[in-house]
Length: 304
Image 1 (cartoon, rainbow, N blue to C red):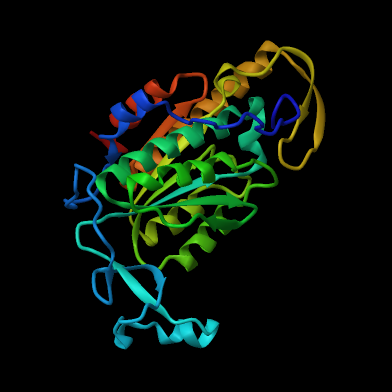
Image 2: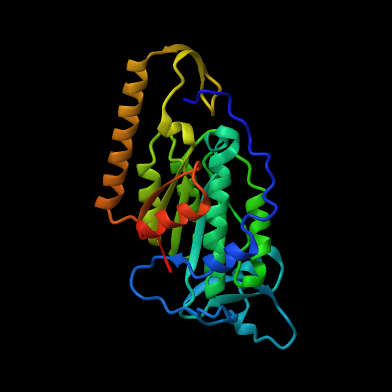
């Protein structure tokens, strides 16, 4: 339940991170299981045609290309001659999933804006290393991907995708995670950025992501009032997703019970992720992005 009617995020993300901040954050990358070789100087590593470790995408056939590299199944479906391209060894595949449900829009869109900035930070760092990044918007049980980004020069296209994200509709993280899982060509490093507000529960969704990921990271974003508690007195509680309204009188006792229940749920969440070896961080929209990055490093979600 939200205390006020949700307001969609209408603040434009003209420059999610200024140039100086990007320069400082460029060394950050997702914590990875084991060692994955990377190019820390951010040099472009070309995708290989017809060979490599993981399928990346297609490119149009050009005169002189070897016919044995044509994806004939794709040709049968589309009538276009396309060559399969593969990731070279050492390039990490990263999928960043951003919750686009209406609960992310409360508090004037502060949670969605924080999610956008964190996703932008992770994307910039990954592209600087030469990794591949695909951004996904989760909305009402579906997962919508961006194009795959491979080079630092493409970060502006990635930011444009993030800028266009809007929060609306109900939450169905399990359905969206299932949709994402069925569309994954290979295992990736997966990051879920969400407020984890889901009446059906977040556990099933995270378990689905874990089964199709090399490593699954969870970043929870929270609004300032969620920690502070409810306003005292007569209030109207409005569900941010289905619009249901409830008239209530919030007494100090009721507010104390709310805060106790909320804190207990947060502790259960921490235990759930830690017991399953899932890197987890909780970020507050009331804090500057720099402090959010510190929290991510402490939780070992990211490394420098």
